[in-house]
Length: 260
Image 1 (cartoon, rainbow, N blue to C red):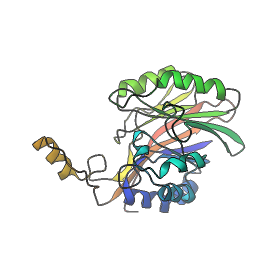
Image 2: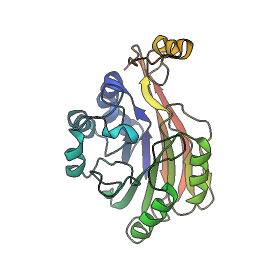
Image 3: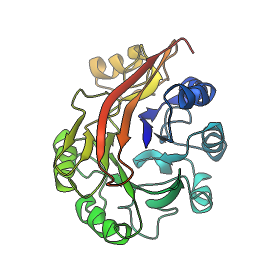
Image 4: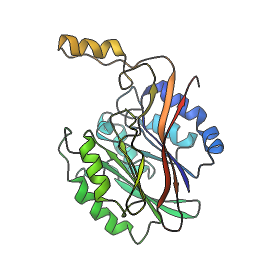
């Protein structure tokens, strides 16, 4: 199975670039499955139902998210209604939506788990224990298991990667918007990368206008972030996973530069 997992989609221009090019990418890269983190797809922070549907209808099979998914209240019911849109599984069970699901893709059962880190993040349940509990449910059902770990600290991402090595097909880090150069296969055939990067403006600070962010650092005063303009880049990871064993055969960081 060939899989493309896109990093955080940031804002309208990135959303447009992904939507307009995802069909071509599926064909050119011979993809069976496309996933993307979308917690910043609406205005650079949060997600609204219209934009979620736009990305899914364009060809992204599964949408994952993170701590910013709760910004727009209208997404709450949509999370309950949409099996292909996930929120982190280690929020309390009363939270809207689901943190993992099983999808039928190319004749295989693909489990996708969305988790949130705790280091430098809002308090949530333990992602390590949550992952273990979910895997007890999925191990008899899924041929392939993918994990989006939306976390700030590289140490926490690496630790969870080793913790789940041999138990999941791949763990892909999101949230920091900076693509890391450590794509690798851990023991037991678990593909790993600390961060997928982002789909967003190339000339930016994590997708935001550089001057606005600079003022915040220089003046030490709160700033209202403004989305950057200009050309967009798409980043993520390309994976090949063995259908029989569920092990990753190859994983590499992937990037496409505009104009789109």
